Length: 461
Image (cartoon, rainbow, N blue to C red; front, side, top):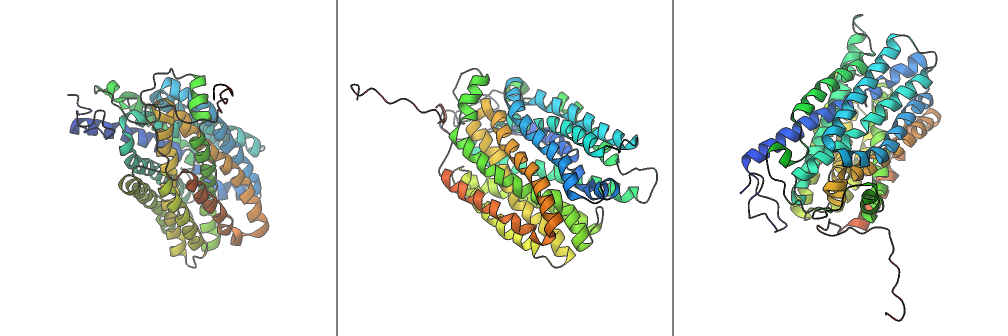
């Protein structure tokens, strides 16, 4: 009997009965991977914190111009997901996360050096190019997490992994926003810490986690001394080589994944509308500056809300919906509507800061269910990175539109329209989930694609 499984789980469609040693090794694997992914967020969402400072110091206060920088980064990320997903499926998640950490860390350092050297005469051009380079390598993050963890979790355990994915994301946000906020606050008081260290610090953190991941992260149980086992996902039992044709047939034309993409476009709009603009909204509408006590309430709320949302969504999926993800996402989309409207109606700084965490509870819950868990289920172990890349990438198509479109909207109409413009996308996401209500992956079968078979000849009929 292997340490990874027992006969009770073999061939039954039930989760394996993992030994304590296996579960500890799996925890060690995803925890290091999760910390590495969290440092990616430090180098991705630090731009949210410095946004107001850069606009006021270099761009004359224009949210639209800064949105161009974000647009270049977000759309580079989105396009890269479709390219790098198949790459990660071929080379494995461990190599992919190492490539991402090295590249994203290098480009964050270059952005810091840009301001250190005073190269701000053509800031939009330089910043757009460097942020786009950063986001190209950032795209390896989520797909690597999903790719590595797919062989370690049975389908019936992946609701729990959805919660784990939410923890990773939440930890990344609090590391990004709190660290950058602290640097911005301290830089205003002391001369030895420049504000652009908000880009240098993540590069150091990613360098450290690169080394730790290289030493300890493993792609599959057998790489760590345990036997691989049947995970009962969409590619389970399929011995077809993972090449581009496989990815096209089983992922890029998969009806379920394409439907999930439509929902994740909505998630991307909601998510980025809140996270990209809330620091400036708190500062201008409620007097809450980055690094202040109430700003820390908001960032801590992102962490607590994201963890709670991810764990709750995963538990509901496995406990009440037989490991189906769409029903949970449906209810969380509706909860987003309530939370976002409540945020816009906040009348005190404390309620405004707390409202950010409430929104993130339901935003991250959906994101974990779809990009983190459903991508493994329907992409399978072989196509998990490509599926995760598609779902995560389409979010950043929406994010790019949001960064410029919402910026223009706010420049013209003010903050009064902010939350009301978000609500329709949550409602559309909920409607899309009703189309997939009963869907689960079919192990040992080829999942349905958009290919239409020819009808048999009349004489054969």
